[in-house]
Image (tube, rainbow, N blue to C red; front, side):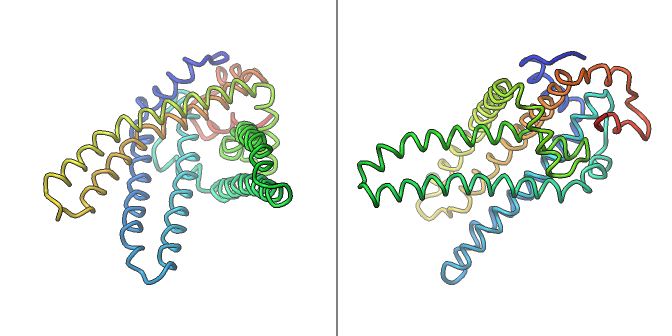
Length: 294
């Protein structure tokens, strides 16, 4: 129990999966497979609907299912990591019991983050369009490039400062406004550390997911070519979807673990939370109360 280094966080994000395979890989597999099947069916059934309405409904349904799945996974895996830090296992039922009451707040937080992203991107697009209309395309390109860079920087700041809010909602049982303020307070002193570790974790997860999905892509291409030009494209899409799902099942617990351990590390550095963890009991009805603010 001490401030966590990069290797501690990455090793911990792997170790908690090995210590709780049923509550991590089991939950992730169930959620990812469900959303993959929904997305697969929507992708192949939506084009059959007349006009563009079916396609639009399909896209919105798929996006909504993926968003809810991501929120559910982030909340449940946060609970698993918290119990692993305490040295105690947790069942899937107990995990859901802890998260279900916090789902509305997690959904609201996610929608607010999406709204912030949309507003930032929309403001930049409208500004560039206004410049192009007033001063021409050359001026729009000249001024648009730094605006895009500022947009990327702003998005990085927003996501870094709010990256600990889901943990505050689930573990500290805070409201959405209070969790946002809590996340900013914890993340601001360690902004570059949190930003760098999350960026590195995302890159590692993306590379692993690509490495897993590439053989399935080749297999899909091989099956399609081997069966001749009449081979149904649905078989190729099925194989590709399986590869993508396996990649998500393996990488999602890792990235969720990194985020939760960054929250633990932030509290250790800001509040000497390691002493609280050392003196707390990992069992009993008050085991989860140690995460509440004091």
